[in-house]
Amino acid sequence: MPNRSFKEYIANRFYSEFSDAITDYIGDDIDQAELHLFRVQAVGDWEISDIDVRYVSVSDLPGMMIQFDAVVDAEFYVRDANHSTDVDEETHQQFLLRCLGDLAHNLDDIQISTVSLGHTRSKAAAPLSDSLVPIIHSEDLERIAEDFLRKHYPEVLTKPMYLDPAELARRMGLSVRLQRLTEDFSVFGQLIFSDTKTALYNAETDCMVATDVKGGTILVDPQNFFMRNLGSVNNTIVHECVHWDKHRKAFELERLYNATATQIQCRTVGGIKDSTARSASDWMEWQANALAPKIQMPLAPFKQKAAEVIRKYRSELQTDELIDVLEPAIDELANFYAVSRLAAKIRMIDAGYDEAIGVFTYIDDHYVKPYRFKKNTIRKDQTFSVGVKDAVIESIFSFELAQKVKSGAYLFVDSHFCLNQPKYIQRDNNGEPELTKYARCHMDECCLVFDLDVKSSGSYGKQFFTECVLYRDAASNIIFTPHYATAGNGKEADILKAYNEDIMLVLSSLPMSFSGSLDALIKWAGMKEEELAEASALSEKTIQRLRHDEPNNVSLETVIQLCIGMKLPPQLSSRLVTASGNSFMPTERHLMYQFLLNACYTHSILQCNDILIGQGFPPLGRANKV
Figure 1: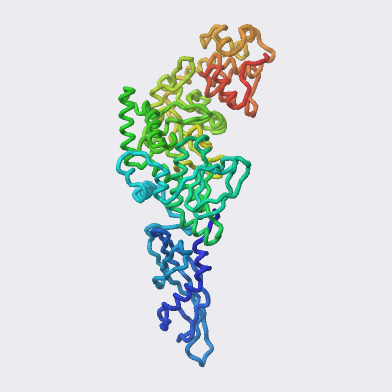
Figure 2: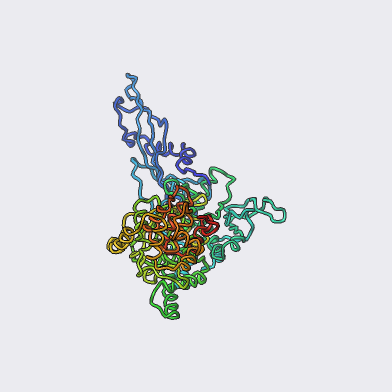
């Protein structure tokens, strides 16, 4: 729906009415206008030669009624009353016109109730924008959702209960119709404001067909259920109900400009554009997206239900740790309210359970184990969790992060840059590094923070349900680009001191030759050749030859396999690469190799290969020549 201006509309349509109202206000007493005149000494004949609507302040009223204050600049042409002189003058004065009208009657019944001098507008109790979209601030969303429910579905405010979207629509005088909407499933919901023919997809003919639809109909594509879940269908219906309740006036303004307008389409992409570039449609989508889950899960009863479910799972699982019960609790709440898991998770955070930020997170197509952190440790546009590609880019191009990683202070484990200490990193049953339970319960103590720059694969740029950018799930279309946050990071100084002293001793003892360095490092690692062969995916014969006979040339991949097999810290692996005569080139594959040696050197060769394959690179250990 294009942007429309209410100010421009009334300025064009009611030019004569505004001019006549100001004329009537002045009547026979021109002094009422308090004109500022310099040439004319005594006012004789006068007329309003032009008017310009400068500002309009619109207030929402029940039904389709609106009240608006229009600040009008009137241009006066004034002649001197002394007929012996030929003196005239142009001057301006501003007037405030208070008006009342019914959009259901196309403002044909407009009333100008008062006219006064000046431009001081009263503050609107329920302000509308120039496009007649409600002006809603984030901090008012809960109150507005409650007002909506008091009006249409008050019982859900009294106790935890499921809100039936179809019943909500019925109470609002709307009907819900399941209908395939498009061939490519790009539209999940469509709200028809007035009787019309609209193009809908017909599976039998495999084309869009003009179909009669009555006004007040919510069309929902049934593929919404199959592509996502029942929660998405329910959210779509409530979303369209919000449009009907909040945005009919904006739609009627569109009809005043364009009599053929009949509907709002809501596409599969959620979110909003940057606030500096939002259109009226963007604001309407933001409001419907933000209000729908708050309507489905009103906050006070939701808190009551959440506390009940948490108590239940703490008892069943015999634990006091909140992150141990949040996953089953969120799933039960999602089932109870018939919403998506993501919506229930976000509502938990709204309810004050910040720990929910760290659950049901998916990065690089794999599940990140739950974690929590001290309240207010990070902002809503920050995160502890990053994907491999972003981790590689940031660890190479962020100088501060690069220094931390190259020092061996941090390892990339479970999608986090975590302090390299046994307190925070342990081995799982397969010998792979993982975060300890303590680390997952104290993320702010051991993991680095990243700022999030939010992008999207669709036309909208931020959010699906709320303004918060931390909430990612496996089905989200939102793309996040993390950037290392220098502020608040840097906990490793004391930990590194003893560690670096040990590494420097080893470095100072290494010979210059590759074979000599390899032999010394194998001894330092305390490994037998057969153990290293298995750990590096190389043959024993290859290791023996490289260890005892200085090679003429050895491939970079082979050196990396040896470093990973011995789990060499970055300083030591860098020394072995240099001794081999190899160097890293500025290619994507070599950047990945550097990342593995710097941030993943305690991983097994199998896990490193999984990382390489996940980023589209061939694994190590295949046909490497020495």
